[in-house]
Length: 511
Image (cartoon, rainbow, N blue to C red; front, side, top):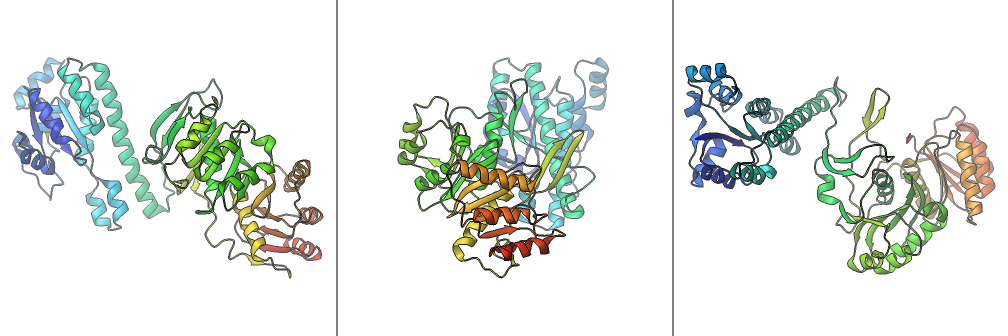
């Protein structure tokens, strides 16, 4: 008779798994709450201290850290010396280990009590998982309820192959590595402002992408926790690596205004159209006016529900991706004929954001890591008026939109907004003056009137020349962080032109 050790915090389907093992002639060894659940359900099981010949002690801190457990897992069945020593020591083989770990994440989410947090750091569990994974040649290690069916099927149909055990071994080390990373990151956040000597970034694989940024590169989507698994649904097509990065840029902008009917059109991760209107149909029409040429083949993020009427309007040109809170059935039917169009939704009336607290970028030889940037709720509201001219409520709304879009657009950038719609944008330039000029040139080519608009920059204007150019174009309101050594010159220029100028005091570079 073979033996299986079952000790799990996540008890999903553990009773059914144990019963199936019993039917396959496995003797069950178990611990604590798992043992109680199994025996209450009528599953024959042996409590761990019958194996260890030692009682659980120190309030459960020590129960499986024992040579009868680890010897039973770790001794090699292909070495006679190991078999002989096991027999000599009275160590019986354990052939399957099913363990998942104390709920550390759930604990830190519900309490700040450090004593309770410490008690929810698993010691014996990771040790058993690592032991079983190390001896995968002889032992099955199961760390997820998702694998129970496959394991039972393999055991019942003579499919307990080395390849299966190797795959489970990899999952096991991923399980313990992610667990230890979570603990280390938490401790560094609590005691070292999140900037410890080691930084761990852990993601769960959602899917492979067809390739990376280019066909010769491999690519895949990984999620923090279960964000994409729970919220992101593919309705049509297959998301590419580039689609996903473009979607990320577009949805952050579209969802930056709460429940307002906002639409962002993006290309290569940057906005080429944005508007807020009473209806999403009107918002799309206004967003498209900013740069319909760039919008061709672009990504449209809809902070709401795509209806048949909106879908018919969108169907008038080639779009590569539409991502929305939801896309209703009538709209899906409209899009069906568009073979190259990809549709995704969050299954909600609005876009769902993860609001990650961290941000990082790969650089040659490593990565840079930081707190995630965002425009605070009162940043624009509390901006300092530095000119004699005051913007009215409508102009301040345009300023807020321009400022938030600028904060999510590649630097150097400037954003012009009029009547709650973006009318010009310049981004990713080495000169802020060039960004302003390119934006105005494009607006002129599109026949868009920027007079009366609000202008935002994600960083300060170093010289008055950008203000002069904005005034010539008819801009009435400017919002920027301020902080230049020539701020007084910039303020004077704004006053000369009769413009209202606001400083937020916060820079939002996006490199």
